[in-house]
Length: 136
Image (cartoon, rainbow, N blue to C red; front, top):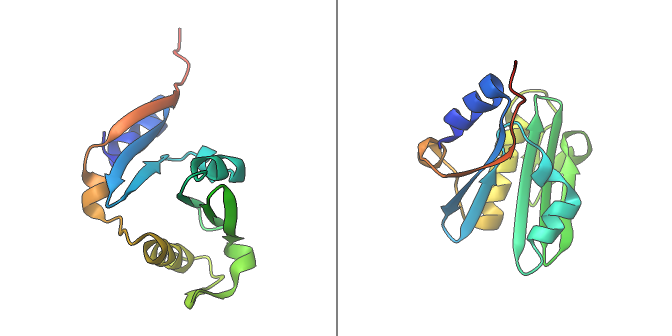
């Protein structure tokens, strides 16, 4: 399923899912309108023998960036606490898309992977986390 299809499914059928796909040497797990992967304990577990990175945003206000290496959080900041620059990349505290763009640039810098339109439009494995209740 593509990201757009998973987005529609989330809104139309109240079906929470995660898309899994490769990007370079990384595996991407994308949750359309989900948040499970943003939890520090989940991220640390995923990175026990490697690295895991999470970007989370819920509208313009709640934006989070977490990076874990070998089970330990090494970066953990959000739009309201970042202000300034992280590894030379400016993180403005404005309510536009500037923070998200900076987060994607930092993610690319750390991973060497750019997630572009091609990845988002391609079909990936989809796992259902929870499905909406059927109406009688």
